[in-house]
Length: 84
Image (tube, rainbow, N blue to C red; front, side):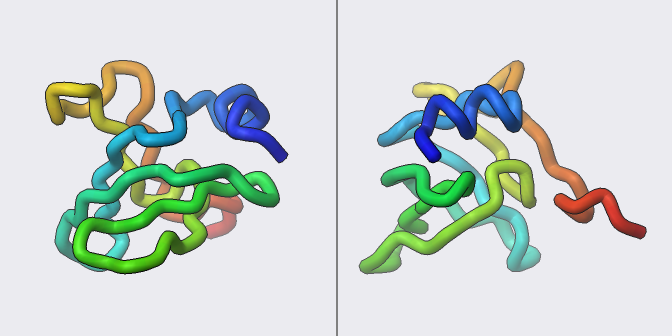
């Protein structure tokens, strides 16, 4: 599934080269979106050598070019499947 599919399906501003802040490890880590695969995103976190798979709405904050949170793209569900 393409990056466009991810944007449309999850209503996020994901794009190749886009910057994100991942907070799933307890502390925020910045990273760069490298691609979309199987309905998810591949993101290389700063300091890592290789991209890893991430769910487009799980503990990700999409950043604007100036490093601030994107006004239409912050989605952080505690559980991406909606289960309790």
